[in-house]
Image 1 (tube, one colour):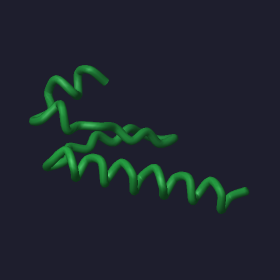
Image 2 (cartoon, helix red, strand yellow):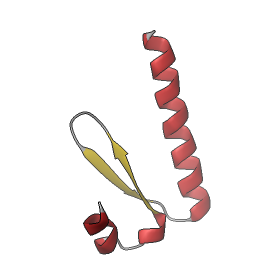
Image 3 (cartoon, rainbow, N blue to C red):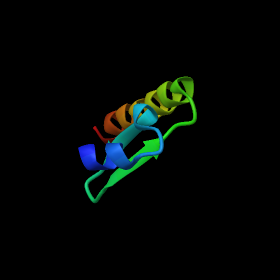
Length: 53
């Protein structure tokens, strides 16, 4: 949410991961780390989706 981004120590490097139960807010140390983290999370979610089919 915007409120969480405005209170983040680094809003430009903050992203959220939404699950069924909650939302996790992550703050990466660098833009490169944020891209890597997001790629890994998306790849894992896609793999899980294919596994469940």
